[in-house]
Image (cartoon, rainbow, N blue to C red; front, side):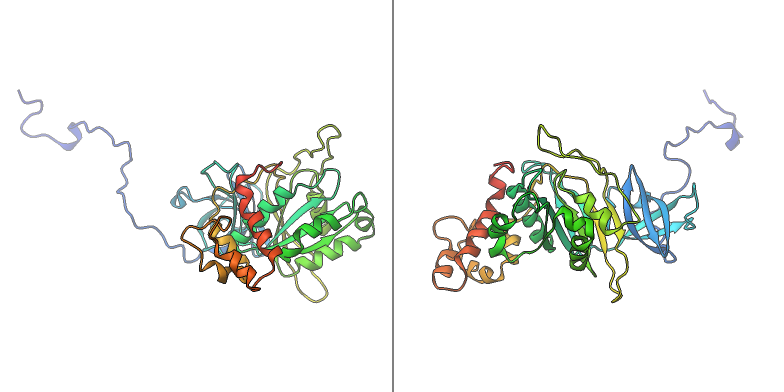
Length: 339
């Protein structure tokens, strides 16, 4: 039996609506050629604070970016309301190619990489000489991450009035890492701040360190107009309490010579996993050893019998202390950070 008569009209036929809507699908996406350039200053619960020209604009990630993460330091293309007025929202539609990426994993068995910042030039490893005690294994891991990302490492040692810096500096002397030593008295008179600031001029510097070492105190001194909350060290555990919960990029005050820079404060870390690191890239930071490694057996760990680096050093091409330092860094994945 015919449900409808001979002459049916489209309006008479019931059509089940599509779950995907009625708009035709297309793979063509707008190019957003008129998008403004922006710099991501911070990311908080899906909202991105971007610097567009001289304004801070709140934005969200556009759907076409998919699962691609947008992190502090990213250079992005922004469309929409760029006035920066309250309750306005723009869209980040494109992430420009990154010049560097600093990453870590929760531990050495975690396959998920966490991008900390993008487009940094320098990694400042902030470590207290006492209260809390320095953790050389964490410093080693940060150095490995810096070498892997192509960042220039910088050791910032604080609280030198509580303990001498010599023993720790001696450990890292063969690596040739730049360093600055400061005390609480130098923070008070401003000399310590200026010494650190000069090493950050013209650079995008990301500060990393475990809680309680004075990392955020350092950033507050470098950028006095933007004060972030700081904490104290627990007298029982000897560890600091997390007070910084998200990364934040801040511009350094302009200098008389015209060079500026950026400093990025990050939450304190208690672990720095290196599961994502390709150890073969770490040796590229040791040009005096890299040439000798070319003669190593395939997949050589550089710490096993038959490693060509032993003969390379024995022939006088490199300092034995440099090879020892390289092997110590390469072994960080096999050791727990607290050892």
